[in-house]
Length: 278
Image 1 (cartoon, rainbow, N blue to C red):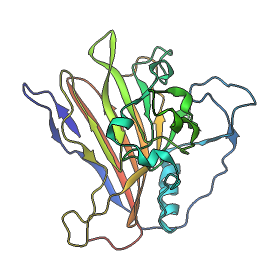
Image 2 (cartoon, helix red, strand yellow):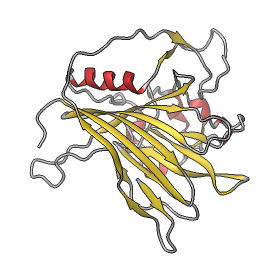
Image 3 (cartoon, rainbow, N blue to C red):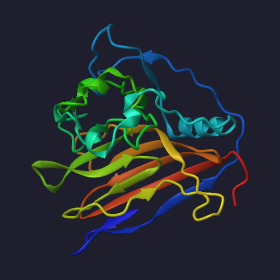
C-alpha cells in the first residue's frame, strides 16, 4: 500500500507484494517458554510479582505454521465476558478513556517509533494480543489498566479484566524531526489506516474482505494477534506481523512500513482456507 502526498488529500492504492493461498497441512510444533517484561513491553524486568508472560522464538515461518495449524481447528473468536461493562460503553464514554503518553512503548529508547495501545470496549470487544519482538524473541504485552487514564464517571471499568487490548497506533516524527505524531492505526476487525507527511487520515484498508456485497452477508476476518518488531535505533522502517482468523480462513500477514512524504506499506499475506473460497 502506498499513501502518496497530494495537495488536497491522501491517495491510497493497494499494493499486494505476495498473496499465497495455502491449504492446511501438518504443523511443526515449538515449545513456548515463559518469561517476563514490563506491562508496556519494555525490556526491563519488574520482578517475580509480575504475572507470567508468554515468550517464544518468533519468525515468519513460525507464524505461517501457526496460521496453518489454526486453520485445522474450528473457528472461535475471542470476546469479552457478556457481563463485562466494557461491552456497554457508548462512543462518548469510550472517548473518555485515553492512553497515558508516559507509558508509550520505546518512548525512552531513542528510536524513531513509539507505540500506544487502544483500550477495549464500545465497538472493540474482541481482545487482541500484542507482542513485541526483540532479537527474534517474542514477548507478550500484558493487559493492564495502569497505562490508561479514566475520566470521572467511568472508573468502574478499571476493575474488569479484558484479556487483551483492541489495537494500537504508531508514532513517528513524520512532519518535523522533533515531534512524534500518529501516522498508523490497527484497530477493529482487520482494519488499518495510515497517513503520509502533511496529510490526514482517509479511508481505512482491510487485511481481507470475504463475500463483499453477497446476499448471504459479508464475513469480517479479524487480526487477533500482532507481533511488532522493535526497530533498530535510527531505523526508518517498522515491521508488523499479524495473525488473521475468520470462519472461512486464517492468514499470516507481514507489513513493512516506511513513513514519509509517501508512506509505503509492503504487505505479504499467506492465507490458509478452512473451506472452499470462490
